Length: 278
Image (cartoon, rainbow, N blue to C red; front, side, top):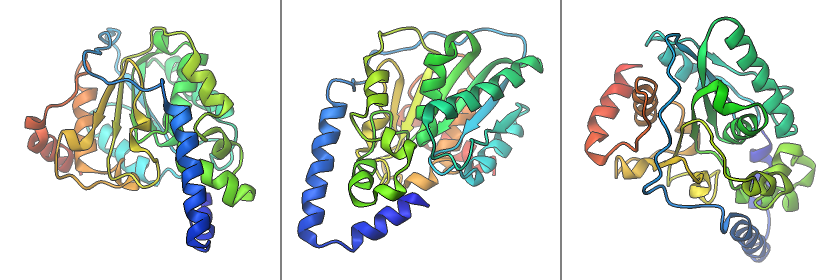
């Protein structure tokens, strides 16, 4: 996987060069994220569109296109009676994110033609950026009940910056587009504020892939750090789709018409819900 090759080259560098490149990545990240992130306090999206038809759940994988973890989450969702499908991105999921949004739109069209109500899109990691692109390009508010993102670099990731410097040969289109301040992310962030489907963005402070982790914050969304729900939760980036806490939050969100940030008092009940679904 491209990330692993970047890490290998990174580890082989001298401490001085790693320090210099880290400073570069942080500087670019600060420039790309500044002004684009706002706190979730007081930001409550509208209720989801009402429909008598159950809405299909479409799960979008991250960079590299692996579906293994999302297959597990999809199976758990199906046990609630909802249809859930994991999107298979073109190629290996490292190509142009706009093209990946088009692939997602094909799945949405298929679900709606089959009689689904407004869909739910769950984007994991870079899949959340794909969901954002789909929303703004393919009329998300009219076709989606909600969007949920898990550890998504909505304002970019420092690792992508490092990849363009350390290992440009393994930093294809999606990697380049995930650099903080890239033309794609800048375009998304500068779009006029508009209606979007109710949006829940979850992330973990233990994330070592998406740095900074709160790159997952999106203005107007319900933005939730998992550690604000379960203070001692230790959840890595790769654990997000299968963590009992995340599964519990996703299942509860799918069962309600209004998105709200889960309080810390719900930690144990959410863990139990997520664990029972295994």
